[in-house]
Amino acid sequence: MKGRPRRRRRGGFTIVEIIVVVIIIAALATMIAPKLLGRVGQAKSTVAAQHIQALEQAIDLFCTDYERMPESLDELVERPDDIPAERWNPPTVKVKDLNDPWGRPYQYVCPGEHNEGSYDLFTLGRDGQTGGQREDADVTNWQ
Image (cartoon, helix red, strand yellow):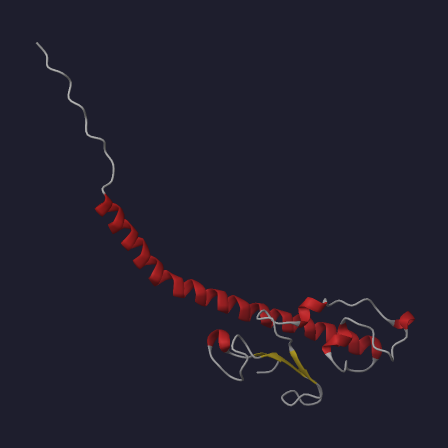
């Protein structure tokens, strides 16, 4: 005679196994997170450099169209009083493009201190202070 079939034990995870897995995932996250956050900062610096190049092109177009340098970056998006409406070309820059990826306005100095006979265009990076390294470094239109 055959006996009753044995019940199989369910194959689940114990609480200890789950805790070990959570600890391993947390350890991996603490090693990877700083590298990922560094990439975000690096990406913002790259975006700032691209914005500066686009602003340089807009300034060059402004100079070509109106035979003078803009007094401020605002003149790239709003018609200055000395330019008649019929001569005003629609802007190639949007107001939001006048701010760096950290939310601060790009700095425009004309005449330039670093680019003599021209203009300086820059952002002070994430920290908003002169100098710095990595994502805190200044992004400029001069070397």
